[in-house]
Image (tube, rainbow, N blue to C red; front, top):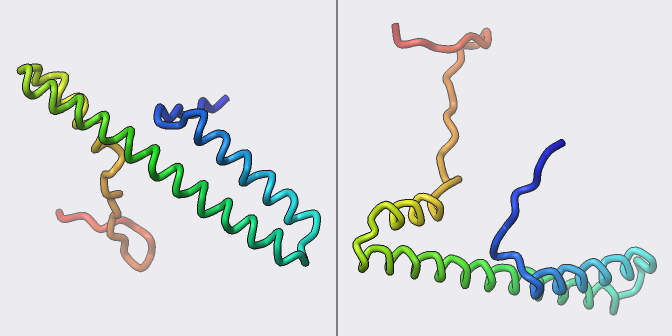
Length: 108
């Protein structure tokens, strides 16, 4: 069974916005020819993405504030944990060079 990652920035406000968006899409799928339902869905979609971005921004500001406080109080280990937590997941994927036949290219 695969465990899901919990997002600490995901709170009640985000859940309510997503529920409103889900309700709008279900109404739209019941009547796909309605222009007003389509416009309502699009506004809910923009509203939801805006709320999610705002909550993520608040969360990141809070995390950076904690890292800054750790720096000022000389808690370097905690500061680097916060920084690495923020910067994690942004690694560039390695791509290996392959020959035309599909075998990997080696430098030896």
